[in-house]
Amino acid sequence: MRNLFQSAEEECELREVFWDSFSPNGYREVNLPVLESYETYESLQTTQSRKSLLKLIDHTGDILVLRPDVTIPLMRELASSYKNLDKEIRCWYIQSVFRQTDDLTIPTERRQAGIELFSNQSAENDAEVIVLACRALTELGLNDFKIELGHAGILSELNRILLLTAEEQLQVKSFIQMKNSSGLADFLKQNNTDETIREWLLETVFSYGDAPSVFKRFREYSMNHQMTAIMQHMEAVYELIVESGYENHVTIDLGMVNDMDYYSGIQFQGFSNAIGKPLLMGGRYDEVSRKFNAQLPAVGFAFDVEAIFLAKKYWD
Amino acid sequence: MVPMKIAVAKGRIAEKARELLSEGGVAFPDTLYDERKLVITSISGDYQLLFVKAADVPTYVEKGAADIGIVGKDTIMEDGKDVYELQDLAFGKCQLVVAGFPDSFPADTKSLSVATKYPAIAKTYFDQAGIRTEISRLNGSIELAPIAGLSDVIVDIVETGSTLRDNGLVVLREIAKVSTRVIVNKASYATKTAEVKTCIELLKKGVDERRADYHNA
Image 1 (cartoon, rainbow over the protein chains, first blue to last red):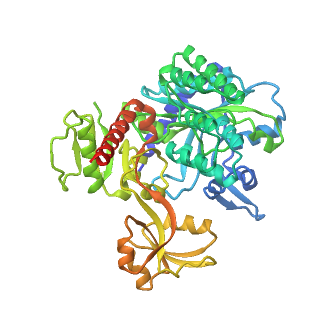
Image 2: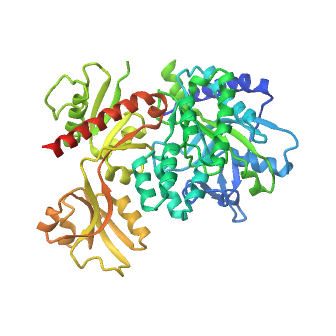
Image 3: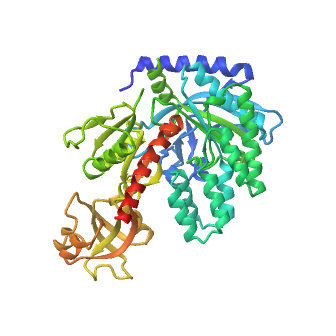
């Protein structure tokens, strides 16, 4: 059972840290509606995540949902006033989100706290968000955190090369998500994938570890300019993280797969030694705004507030 | 230092894990495997084995109560937990199958009653095949179900198939090949990458050496 007072105090502390960490960079706090139209999510999400939506019906018979995340409502709101990105927009939030799962240990209402930077893709913009995540975690006193850095383009590139059916794509995604290299190797063999490509794919998607060695290994295996461009971008982002002094907190995971299907560029998640689940997730999602008839590329992250304070308790 | 926590199924796998680690130089205070102990810590304090029920191994690992788990692929498939499946240890090999009387599963089957310890695997398999099912979850003696008229077929693991044969049942379809896997908590992998990799190498090396010994004998 959560302590009511403690939960409020935690939120207060987090608000202070966010204010101190993000305001100097021009970020402003936003509040968003709790209720969203079901249609907003219908077109965006997979069947699995549609099932997790908490729905209600208004007096006209329309289906509404309690927002399952903050990113989409924020995008929808901004897309109604801006069709293009005239200038960069920086916001942060601490808001509740609602999702139902079969796992009874996960509460339906959870708090998320994060930032969104509406900006074109560039190493500077992507690194800014990751560095701010590191800064906030450090300010909160979580000294042992690790940020895994991946890129959504790797899986899309793989799907493009392998010419898989939708069902096969799901299988491959699941192998990569579980880092099941023998499973993927068997699958590629059965799929009669060319041996050079096979070796290259297995080397790439299971590359995990400190940045210099992963980047070096990848250069030896590089064979496709799409992937080379992805790696150059990741390296550039990493260099900027090094300049900010957070390199010891970064691990490269080229096989990172996120259940949030909307990421299109860099993606990352953060962990602490103290607890078994992610503290934060984030990434670049440049295509989402198209669904709202706008061109608003963006990058951001969200902390799982409960997870953050569980980990923090361990360090206090 | 905080030990690397490894959740293993009580019994055969637990004993094997302890042996493999011992051979890799991780000594445990007791030479004999004691059923009643729930946790044992290596003498150096680097490793800790948690003895749990096989079906609970993925839960311990997903929640981070254990960094690593050693468990059969069947349990991983049934549970669908959010963990890494980093290594196939290639022992404890068996098959996950649909079994029943020779005529219980004709090619044009539209619906079946199924008895199994693996309701999630059974549902996924038959849903993909477009067959409607009525699934009964059992906890043991699955082979009895078709004989007693509880179900048309069963979904279960078979090693040699002798229990099936003794009861007049046959393998009707293979669902998947099963073997013992190493699963890893995502946060442990991120924050203790080197230690996790070392532990997996240790287990894998032990298994490979035994296989070599077996082939040479």
